[in-house]
Image (cartoon, rainbow, N blue to C red; front, top):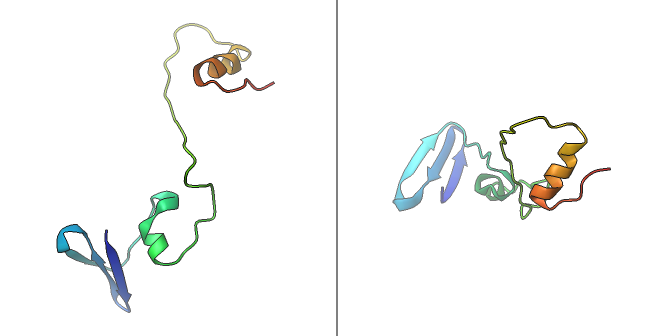
Amino acid sequence: MVGFTQDDTGVDIEVSGGRSLRAGYLVGCDGGRNLVRKAAGIDFVGLDPSTSWMIAEVAWAGDLTDLELPQALSTWFGAAAPA
């Protein structure tokens, strides 16, 4: 999306390559750097968009007690293990 204009009946959306679309609604759901929200002048109240997160799915072979999990996580990710 390059830009958009809104009127009483919908939204004209300008996309790359000089093309455009017409829709009844335009919804931006891609977080703190959302172009739709910024263009509409709507502030993002939340975490700093420069913050990075990592999500991982792990398959664990063997037993893992509650006491071992914080230590394992701190070893893998370099974070302090919770007390």
